[in-house]
Image (cartoon, rainbow, N blue to C red; front, side, top):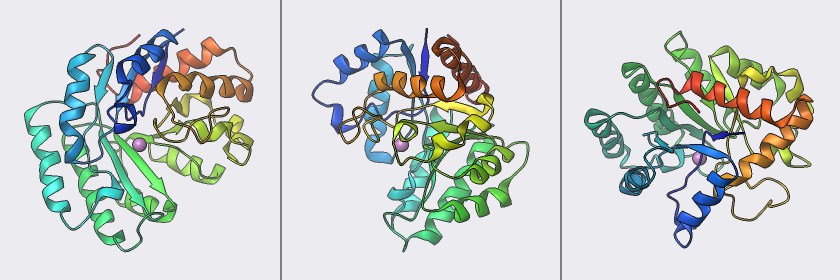
Amino acid sequence: MQFTDTHTHLYSEAFDEDQDVMIQRAIEAGVTRFFIPAIDSEYTERMYALEATYPDHMFLMMGLHPTHVKENYEEELAHVEAQFKQRSFYAVGEIGIDLYWDKSTLEIQKDAFKRQIQLAKKYKLPIVIHCREAFDEVFEVLESEKGEDLFGIFHCFTGTKEHALRAISYNLKLGIGGVVTFKNGKIDQFLSEIPLEHIVLETDAPYLSPVPYRGKRNESSYVTLVAEKLATIYQKPLNEIAEITSENANAVFINVKTI
Ligand code: NI
């Protein structure tokens, strides 16, 4: 049984002490493919180093995270574009809008989001969306960019059933992580009504650990706990959840090595 973690920040400082052991633990648990979202230029070298150490397991994205869209965002976007000119990536991500941390940057967040969607279209790549307290704003941008060339993942999906259906209408899969195991996470209430073909697994490590590790450091091996919860919700054996969600990841991250 093999799992795909479609969103994990394995290069984070949170893993500086035990990165190798933690990655081995995930691989031993059957988590064999890791999709690595970018944050900003500070982390680019760390991402490349991770890929160099585990070339068969790590699949990199490139992009500017919405909470890192600041006064210098033109320089940061230029850095992102420069990386795409040098090499290939599996997605543009993570990108989007976050109004939880800072509402004052909404306009530049929207601009960065839109321009990175256009970058993804230029390279025929999926986008990986981060949305926090910003469903209306994210959907407004997606509405203006929708089309066959727009596709990807709505990462860490925490919305309502209506939000889920709208995201799916833009060719997006829902990235489901630890929140689905939370008592007050709400998405477990309606997820069974969303066909499994629209779901991919993720951890968002080191954040948002599933129960029983809620509040502690998250790591990619815990994606199996998310899969177990989905097995209960969808009333399917765990191996089917592993297989279908991995195939769904293959459908998004075109040309990725399959397992
Ligand atoms: Ni993330």
